[in-house]
Amino acid sequence: MAKYIIKRLVRSLITLFIIITIVFSLLRLMPIEGYFNNFDKLTETQIQVKLNSLGLNDPLPVQLLHFYQGVFQGDLGTSNKYREGADNLHIILEKIPISLTLGLIALAIALVVGLPLGILMARSSRTRWKIGDRLGTVLVVLIQAVPAAVYHILIQFFGSEYLNFPMLFSQGKAISWVLPIFSLSLGNIAYYAMWLRRYMVDEANKDYIRLARAKGVPGSAISRRHIFRNAMVPLIQYLPNSILFTLMGSLYVESLYSVPGMGGLLVNVIKVQDNTLVQALVLIYAAISILGLLLGDILMAILDPRISFSKKEGAR
Image (cartoon, rainbow, N blue to C red):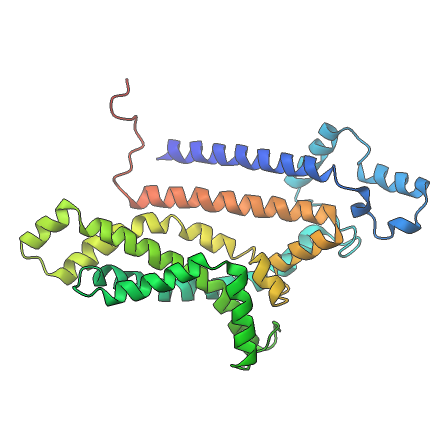
C-alpha cells in the first residue's frame, strides 16, 4: 500500500511539474503588455527596467528556476494589473472562502438528490414498467446533452424573471445564493445519479447477488448491504476531486452571476492579461486537480479490497 501511494505521488508531482513548465513557457510568449498597468505611457527605458526587475530578460531556464524557487518559498509573485503590487497568494486566499462555501453547499445538494435518484432508477429498472428509471434517464440525458452554458443561462433567466430571485450574486443576501448553487449542483446531480444507477445495475446482475436471492435473502438487505455498498466504491473515487474542485469554483457560473470567487478571478485576470496572476492561478488549479485524482485513487484502493498492490498474475 505504501509503495503504491509513493508511486502515485511521484507520478503526480512529475505531471504537475510538466504542466506548470509548459504553461510558464507559453505565458512567456504572451505580449509584454501583461506585465504593465500603463504600458502605453512608458518609455522604452522604463519598460526595459521593469522587465529586468521581473527577470523577464533572463534566459527561459533561469526564469523557470527562479519561479520554482519562489514557489517553494510560498511566493507566487505580485499582481501587475488586476491589483497592482498586491501579493498574488493574498488575492487568491481572499477568494477561496466564497467559492468553497458555494461549492460545498452545491456538492451536498448533489449528493442528497443525486444518490437517491440513482438508487430509485436502479431499483425501478427491475420493475415491469420502469417508470422511475425512464423519468430519471430523461432528466439525466437532458442535463448531459444540453451544453451547461445553455441551461445556466436559462436557470438565471427563469429564476430571476418568474421566481423573483436576484440575477446577480450578493454575499450579504442569502436569497442571491440560490440560483448559483442550483446551477452548480445540477451537473453533479446528473453525474451521481447516472453512474450510481449503472454500477448498481451491474452489481445486481452478478452471480453472488443471484445466489443471495436464491437463498431467500430479503431484497432490501441485498440492495443495502451488497449492491449499494459495492456500487459506491468506484463512485467514491470521484468525491475527493469534487470536494477539491469546490475551492476553484466554476469559471462560467461565477462569471455569470458575478460571484467574487476563484473562478471569476481567473476569468477577470485573463481579460486584463495579468500574466503573473494567471500563472499563479494555473499552478493552484493544476495542483488541486492532480491532488484530487491522487486522493481518489488512494481512497478507492483503501475501500476496495479487490485491488491488489502486488505483481500482476503471471508476472515473474
